[in-house]
Image 1 (tube, rainbow, N blue to C red):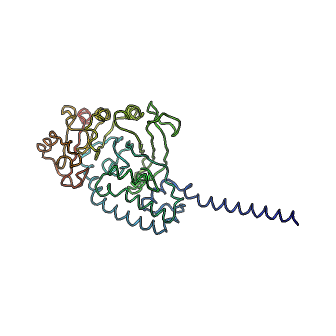
Image 2: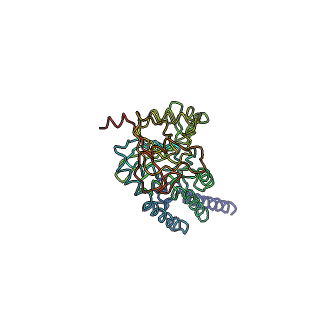
Image 3: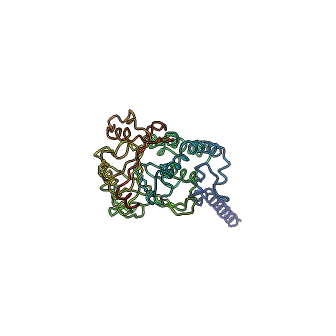
Amino acid sequence: MTTRLAGLVRWTVLIAATFMLLASGARATPAQSATPNDVARFLAGLPPSEGSPLASLTRERAWLGHAAAMDSAWTNIETRQLSRIRTWSSNELATPSDVLYYFFSGPDFLYADAFFPSATTYVMAALEPSGALPAIGRTRGESLSYGLSQLRSSLNSVLNFSFFRTREMRTTLSANTFSGTLPILYIFLARTGKTIDEVSFYDINEDGALVAAGEGLPKGVASVAKILFKGNDGKQRTIYYVRTDLSNGGWRKSGFKAFCEKMEAGDALIKSASYLLHSNAFSDVRTHLLERSKRLLQDDSGVPVSFLKTDEWQLRPYGRYLGPIAVFPDNYQARLAELFRRGKPPGIDFGIGYRFRPNESNILIADKVAVRAAER
């Protein structure tokens, strides 16, 4: 009898353990098997694909409220900003390059895509870490509600003012349930109609080559989140989101300089860049942009116009130059003011940069003369 009882106990323990294992596996499934594209759509407030393990979460009150808020915000920015930028860029940016360099970008794929929708490679660089793949399947109830609310807070400034507030962004991205810049990139990709195929992580060695993340490279190397995606045309595209220090010290030792030099020359977008390219502490990356860019599209926080020699660059101003906002009093450019005064530039019907109101914003397109001549 004792032997039989002991056997029953063993079977009971085994069965209980099996059910616990199965239950644990069921809870982990959404985190493990949801595709990057489903995760992106979920975070963007869009329904994931049919049969997605995230589908059940779209019935939760937190997600339904998030989806409604995102729909409203997106309708607003699409009407007020994005559609106007796409129309403007199609008229003003002839023969865009395949490669776009967007330094000091944060996770702002939104404006990179609006200005340069035909690029096939986007090289974005900023100090903010990409973070890990968002693990939505592990969040429920209040945790999910808090995470989605924090994501909306992270998006607030770029959706309303066209730029991320750096300190605010670092706080919200580090404290969020979904940390890092990757969730923001996911949202922008999903909301602009892209399909994410694959996400992978690398470091850049001193020769500029991508190596698997965590291979024991020295401290200070640049780290990369590589995102493969398709647009509505089905064409394969790539984002390299590079976490790196773009000051002279970081530029020289991170491997990012060598990485960029391996790529072809392209267009460059610079906006709301804290006027860092006005500083000698960022002279190396400024020189790189001048040497390797076919075209610069920037607001007044980009490369100072004094570095754009008229025999090397054709300058086309748009909007109004009113000088920097009060936070950056030392970055007024008299030569830029004169260029805008003499050029009588056409207006723009959208806002960009720190002076985000349409009647106060400025854009400068600088086309490299040799490139323009070769295209004629």
